[in-house]
Image (tube, rainbow, N blue to C red):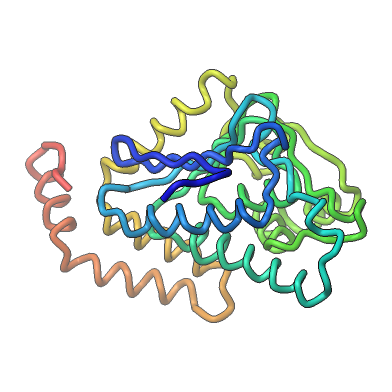
Length: 257
């Protein structure tokens, strides 16, 4: 499939998804959301893909929000559908992805762009990145899960400060409050994210998938995260990976997962 607003490639078990609207600071219009959904589904079903990196084209922006021009004529019902679509993509296809998804934040991550990053399992940022949820300055609030995920990551007080003031923060401040995993020079960003994924790939894939699910369950009201952990812990004991991992440990060799 050809994409208008995204670049998609797979190399060494990594699916690279690049939001490719640099002239619009990679703003998420509805077509881009649709293409993002398609690429995530493609990566999910591709057995060669073990992990996903999402980034933005150019040197200025990861994703500088939604495309506000598209908001002007939306009815209440249409706005609700748009929010539901964003929630589906960010929750079902990114947050709940059985394969690790990392955001490589290479510039502005604002509004829907920060919400996209928040949905990823980890966030690595270049030192020049700026982060924020400025929706209240437009008479809106974050609509793709930002009110929930930001609160889970940084706590209620800091989340409310960011959302209610609409102020931007630096990558270093994002690191300090737990929003960002690591801050790097722009030239080192992608190499570091690839390095982290390669480390994950060296571990048991079945255990990685189970761990993602157990951590996700900690924030869900419909599942008891402790019970999910217990169930996965027991299930992994009968897997090939467990037997291989234990044998490798006991014989002092690298496991072959």
